Image (tube, rainbow, N blue to C red):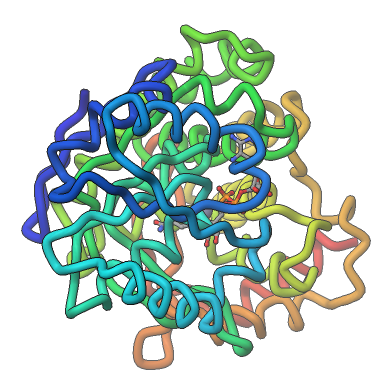
Length: 365
Ligand SMILES: NC(=O)c1ccc[n+]([C@@H]2O[C@H](COP(=O)([O-])OP(=O)(O)OC[C@H]3O[C@@H](n4cnc5c(N)ncnc54)[C@H](O)[C@@H]3O)[C@@H](O)[C@H]2O)c1
Ligand SMILES: [Zn+2]
């Protein structure tokens, strides 16, 4: 169990195999009625609705399900409205907790609905992807996408409990597991060279499903995120901003590939981290060999590390232009997370987008 303590709420993250089968016992203290409302998506429901339903039925608690179509497109303003209407029809009140069973898509949408319903009710995260277990279910960022961009409407709203069932990862497609692993490596690259070395030694075993490696990596990542979020819940001091390592480059790549299956979020983060490291090396901040060490590990586990692999049609300038729409833009300047070495990320506010565009041109060719 890892405790998360923020001004916006304190809660536990429980990490173990088999938690979904015991969901009722863990969630009951947060339910005021003998019923539970659960939001999920169709893929997750196919594998995990039955054991969760059985757990609640065994405890005499009825479940009501809101099942979204799987995919990022469901993290929308329209689905948010439909979910809120459904929750009201079900008679959900302020003191009730809404359960989010799924990956980051389900968690972000449900969290935002919970923050809005009757000016805020509680919610429990039951993350079923590696990305959601190590990143999105912890920290209280919730959002939906608008036509003009991702995560543009959202709120900080901390969950009341997070149950990370490691067994849920057994049914996750390997490509999704690998994409989530990029966010695990991120914690090493940004703040802990020793953990990065652990990833080099154990990443392949983790991706092959080794239970001990998975448990260690999830617990390490949640503890790292909990520390950062406790220090800077609303990303005001710069500490939390370090979690955006690889994300400014990554978002530009996601935008250029139309936020499609061509490049999953975690894949974009992997390549984005390599670009941040190479850009840092180009500026003389870190050794080129260290940047290539990061690239070598990510490539070894099958994550993308070369811009030229993507066959993008855009130029460096077109990619940099996507960064202008970044949420982190602050009075015309875009803070970048750069590296002084592996485990030594910092926030640099002096990066000129023209330099980034030139750098990307060399990486594209
Ligand atoms: N709130 C945050 O701090 C934060 C952080 C990072 C990412 N995010 C958001 O998270 C989202 C991405 O999350 P994600 O990668 O979990 O995507 P996702 O929720 O779309 O899940 C990926 C795919 O895996 C399927 N799936 C989920 N669990 C499964 C399981 N156990 N077995 C089989 N299939 C399963 C889903 O149906 C989907 O097709 C994005 O919207 C991103 O913006 C939020
Ligand atoms: Zn991310």
